[in-house]
Amino acid sequence: MVKRLFLINDSSSRYNELIKACFLNESFKEIKLSNETEEKEIVKNINAFPFDKVFAFFSPIPLFNLCRYLKKERVFDFRLIVLDESNSLEIKKLRNYSFAYIDCSNIDCKELNEKVDACIKENELIVSFSSFGYKYEIPADADLIFDCRNIPNPYWEKGLKEKTGLDEEVISFLESKESVKEFSSYLFNYLDYFLKEASKEERKFLSIYFGCTGGQHRSVFFATQAYMRYKSKYRCLISHKELKRQ
Image 1 (tube, rainbow, N blue to C red):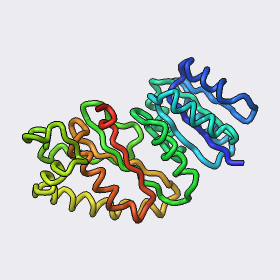
Image 2 (cartoon, helix red, strand yellow; image 1 turned 180 degrees about the vertical axis):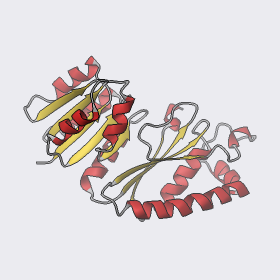
Image 3 (tube, rainbow, N blue to C red; image 1 turned 90 degrees about the vertical axis):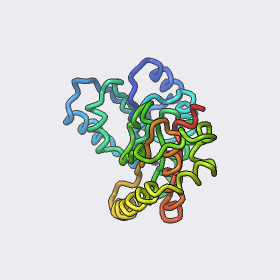
Image 4 (tube, helix red, strand yellow; image 1 turned 60 degrees about the vertical axis):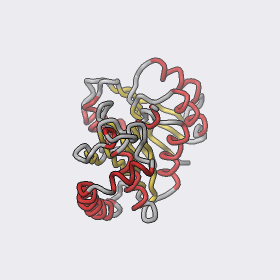
């Protein structure tokens, strides 16, 4: 039976009620950590349970999505570590032990299932390409972040303000810029090397983010370009955090 360790960065009572509803058997176990918890205690708690897969879910995560997923997977053995919302130090330490580190803000149930199921089903490198806007927040689950704000912003071009990096007009605008060509050359030369080396390591899940001011044009363009470039070589996922706000 597959054993999975879930790390959820929220110790509020709403999760306690959810857990009670989802797990009514003894196979589910829970660890609670506070701000005073030392790293050696964290390691001790994790190593005490022989797990095969580790997932770190960091709030905010929609309760409905989490509930649906956990109910779907209730046939497995679980261990849950509940972190206090302010435990930034513990989050950094725990990340060293997680198989997949997933930021669940602005994520729907379908995308949550895709990310987790991809980790479960395949023993190969999984690369998640995502776009975001710096004016909102920096994603907690990022392994790499590429800042695209030095690229000309389509937002200020007539007729492009309401468009996104998925629209042909924006794509054509960006592809016509020398700075985009130069940025792309450096970007993909690095990613070619980085992903090749990462595929040799034990870690099998990478979250790569592209950020611009609002997460609507430039970051969406580059995240999509990266996804299209590598999807035939690696198991790739694509998501655009801020487009879901529209």
